[in-house]
Length: 392
Image (cartoon, rainbow, N blue to C red; front, side, top):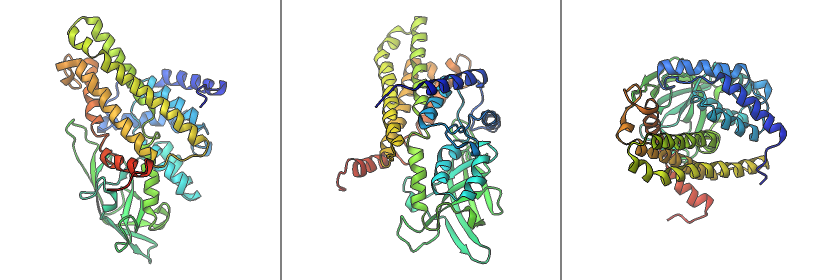
């Protein structure tokens, strides 16, 4: 593996760094609040206007036609500059790769440009009250309406991230109830303003309000909103899941930037001379967290090398997901240990270090080993499909 970037790639890095340093907004409220989401969407539109929102996409869909290496460089520079969370991520990082793989030319033209421009905002409809990590257990149904040329769906999706703010949802619906568990499902894209759709927000413990339950009561969905073919939903969903678990959703730039902030936090606290024993005792833990982030970066370079050569990540994405989700918890937990009692101060509290950002990040990190398939399930996938171990 050649770890040196070309002159053209370094020029791309310099252009991205200059633009981001001049334009990245700082101090935005959480993108999972009404106010914060609106401000984040403004930022997404600015990214799109200068063709930075989807750098690896073809130019006709709003991208720059950048290579995977250049995408990785942009991600590094984005988080190095302190870029805010991408509230378009469910669309551009999860659904879009699936549309590129399975969508018709008409679907690509209809959805991708508006997704890149943050005109259409997407949430993911996987989980149901009785189907979380066991995605094959979904019960929401879609029944064929031949006369109307589409499907009538009924059911409920839950834990829908930013569902309270988005205008489209993609998800799986059972279209052949007599088929085997992993068959008879169809991947549908549904406008949330369609008659019969009810969106009910679910407030989180941290006060953010983007989570939602979505209810479908005789909602009609036309045939052109089927992605990847009728009853082929499981294969299509696994492509989306691979993006969610792999490097697309959680690039190493995100964690390397957090690791650098953790090192800087340790230096700041050491310089104050306060609580010297606690700060000194965590020096190795800080170094270990930084090394784990760097290890993820290096492993990703190997993964991208394989993708460039035409090798699919496949089940390895489960291994990637386990690693980055547990890395995220460790980074933020180490920061809270460094801060001691001050780490419990939340955003807006008097005396909160970094305005409570470490506690906020820690709270979110705890969801990482759960969403995109629990890490317990991912370990089974790795054991069976990567290591080839027999099922008990």
